Amino acid sequence: MGAIEVRNLSFKYKEGEPYILKNVNFSVKPGEILGISGKSGIGKSTLCKCICGIIPKLQKGTMTGEVFLFNENILDKQISEIVTKIGIVFQNPVTQLFSPTIEDELVFGPENLCISREEIDNRLQHTLKILDIEKFRYKNPNKLSGGEQQLIAIGAVLMMEPEIYIFDEILSFVDKEAKKRIINIIRELKKEKKTIIMVDHDIENMDIADKILYI
Image 1 (tube, rainbow, N blue to C red):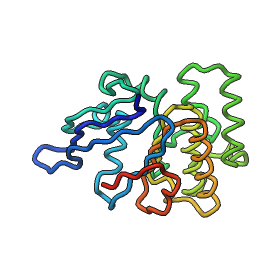
Image 2 (tube, rainbow, N blue to C red):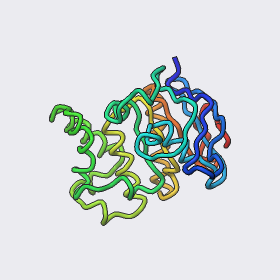
Image 3 (tube, rainbow, N blue to C red):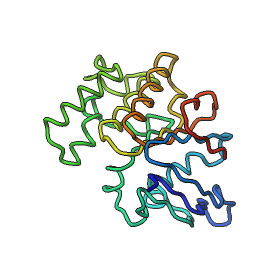
Image 4 (spheres, rainbow, N blue to C red):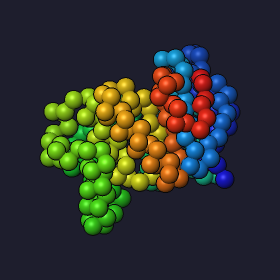
């Protein structure tokens, strides 16, 4: 059973415009890391949005083809179901951060899934530690640097413990030390048999990928 299977996927945002994606086909096995690379504006982020259901459920356009998560068509699932299986971190972390403190940001998702307080606290302590962001726990995300905000956005997705992670250019805003920390986290997720899609324009950042899709 594939964790992700994309069949003949095509998408364009507006009628009369060319397709951003055209007849895309690929699959990712559970526990694999797929790297996606290509020039800026070629459709990498659009593809990520199709895989996690943002397109067409929240962002409209013309989409044909199918996306399956663990053999289930994503169109048959509600967003509330999808977020328990797949988490995405975007290139610009500001688009994902909205809470007054880092702690509030990290616990928001699990609280909305009605996870027990004890389990949320355990996840919180673990996430703060592995990302080395304990010192930011009570700070406002808007007061942090771009790289620090990216770590918080990653932490918010880690808190959900999905089976599939999509990292869309998440190394763009971080310094060398943070990049090393994030790469190590991705390696640990792979050891836990998590499925990962890693989008990056720099092919050198993808030496941990099992295979690479070039768009």
